[in-house]
View 1 (tube, rainbow, N blue to C red):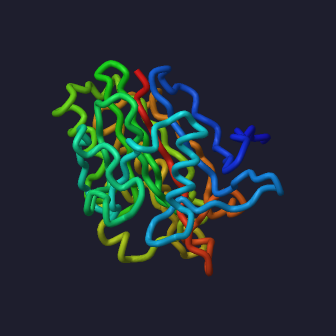
View 2: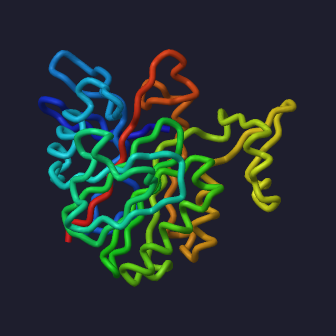
Length: 266
């Protein structure tokens, strides 16, 4: 199947995974690949933190190329928690430059502010971007298995309901590139923490267990009242496509982070 990846040309240009169908017109959803377009040809760009050279500038360029305000870009210090923070004017722009400026131990961000991009970094975990055009609220979620077990999806939806009056049936969810069930082998440490009902998302092949993070998080969204027709899944495996994405499992000697953003435009 041919995938039309959007190229953002110019200095610091980037390749973007195609925006999903169904994004409301008053929102922008961005899934950046690890590929940067330069005059001398494609190279790699790392959007991560922890002292990675050029990462802040990469995030700045990505905002510029997608028409979003870098000064308002807000990123949490992700620790695989179930903590969802509400971003108001005082917090807008937190974490855009350096990890020590980020909201501590925060794996989901929610806002009703216009023009405030919310960002999450991933390298196999699922970036979940949420848009409610009725309540005019947005959220960005970092959903690894620990956060999903702990309830990060439920906490985020509850935060949207409590703070902005969101009705789950009005929320659209966009699940970006993540490790697929083809590659995500899991051990007993994870299986021991899964509720019995969630074992349906684990497939056993040749004596090994593989978790479907996509289906698992989509099911959690449905549990919170989202309409399945409003849940869009990229269904690409980061581990299978290291040419496009950083992957914790696949990049044995190279650590990098992909970047996803959502912003309310109007």
